[in-house]
Length: 456
Image 1 (cartoon, rainbow, N blue to C red):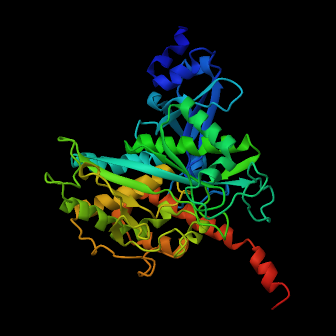
Image 2 (image 1 turned 90 degrees about the horizontal axis):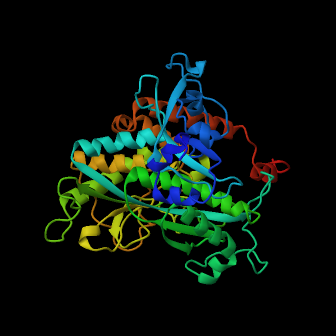
Image 3 (image 1 turned 180 degrees about the horizontal axis):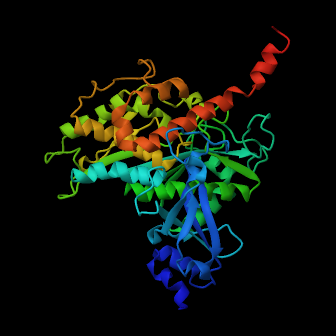
């Protein structure tokens, strides 16, 4: 093997298999920005093989979703665009099977010039939260669910989003949850998702039709939090590329259509004792432990303040509508999908807690970090959960902030969450969200033009 490609021996077998009969042309050196999309550099594979230090400016993380920048008076020399050092995490290498050339993607670790983890990097935020668990001899296990819509191309923001046409030539139907024929309507897209996932070495647990028109859910196998966040990060791009091959869009907006349910990223959590490997939510007799209740109470206590991390945009709050397949409360119960916190049916050793509040529009690293931070605070402070809900919980008192602005106000008052997520990251993140709110306020909506133009 060319010495410049010796690094290939370090990458996962799936990535090696993808390139074994081909000439590797290109490597994408990538990181996740705050919104959850890929940023980085592409280079010829043989140039990457020299492993020269790679740099990106830290200004990437002062940008909002609109591309504008936030001003942070407390940060010295913010606009010098200082360099960050990128180091490849070879365990994350995977194919980019939609490209014309044979290409690999590799997520990179990011440090400052002194080798310290950059606090603004979403992947580093998740690792920071996990370090609290590690210090206590604990290891979280997570399993995210991904919901998204396949919609017709929309090149004019003034026009509403509509479901894509299926193979019958008719728009995808709503309220057809778990329908196999509904999935078949856009089978070619699903086939490409399967093919891309296989090429990338990802294991899909299930794919189902959700309740919305053209809405799909993909479930992933449980595992390590960083690995699963990497996979969701990769999957979002994979799914979008598969949709574009079939003249439609895949959108992860929380609420792309007003008359359809929204898209969530439900997060399943359990926690293992690193010495014994046992699930701390279950005792030796198979019963729930106090730690199980503490974790639930942590979610109930801290998720309202953590909402900006798991519902990061103005649109996110349109999803929280009672009786529309989304929780507005933080009640908990076993086998009850109307509660914000659900305990699925499982064997005792697999006992887990499902956070049903997180939206699919959140950055997977930040969303997982925030949810795990809330649970950890419950464990650490031995919080007591409410009594389990009975029956439908949609009539329960609302716990979820009704708007991004109110959610940010709650985060302002949460020193505990700020400490876990990182003070510098939290400050910049909040500033970006306030800037997005300002930008949103400057936009005149179709509702205003329709109802106010001639009526007031």
